[in-house]
Image (cartoon, rainbow, N blue to C red):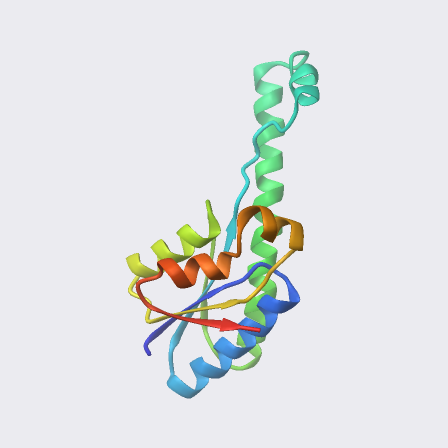
Length: 153
């Protein structure tokens, strides 16, 4: 296995998945890429926001939205950077990406488009309610990926 894709979300479960991926990468001398897929963008969320926004200039509103997007991006990059520390400690060089969209679709598409041999992810991530509403990301990846998938409990 030359290339391993590790999907993480910052949860304890995804940390275990990253640890298993590191173990595999060391034993197989594989290239590793860590990705975090963010599902939201910095869109105005509510009618209350729209009411307040009506009093702002277009430039001010654009600046607020840019700042929010930058803050979200920074938070998501931190998730990937924190996971990369573990790999660095093991002497494993990793590539890091923060992507946007439906997590299962993005993971499957990214793996296929970039020639990965294996996807590693946790069996569950943040929140039971979110999992109930969105379905299990790991289940969707297993069903739709065209390559091998390792689910770590």
